[in-house]
Image 1 (cartoon, one colour):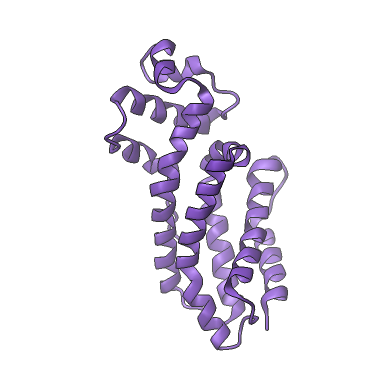
Image 2 (tube, one colour):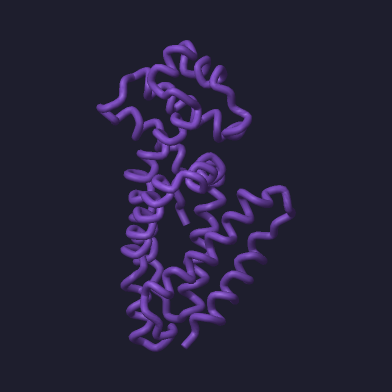
Length: 216
């Protein structure tokens, strides 16, 4: 499972944005690095300005606040990085055809758990803003949903044709699977990161929970 780290590609995406000045790009790249290293709440605007090699006054002329820096930074993640990541997942899915419901769930759950583990810094950086900013949350959900649907819609339809998955409407199956996975990710990396976690055991529980509901 060769998962990409979202934040590794962030500087490249920002630098390619012709609508931003170089000073704005420097602020976004420096701020996301600091947010990932020490957390959004623990990062001061002074630290961002120093890391971006400019004064706080110059930085605030462009972004007004730390919260606005994070909002602007989310835009390329939503528009470019999420679709790219999910396209990779679709390609991996094609390389791992599932003969049974259990095989499909085992691949999907462990793949998404591995992706979350690899990108826990991005999850921690962006989660609070997605939680409290309705517009950004809606944009993120729509993009992620569309890409995930494209990634495994055909697989689910084929499994239903072979009568190895329950004959529910696709949207119901999609919503249930995503709710279970996202619930785990939020607990694991946002709400209770200090708890002792055994991810292999968690994967088995998640797979068993999903399989119990989705078997025909």
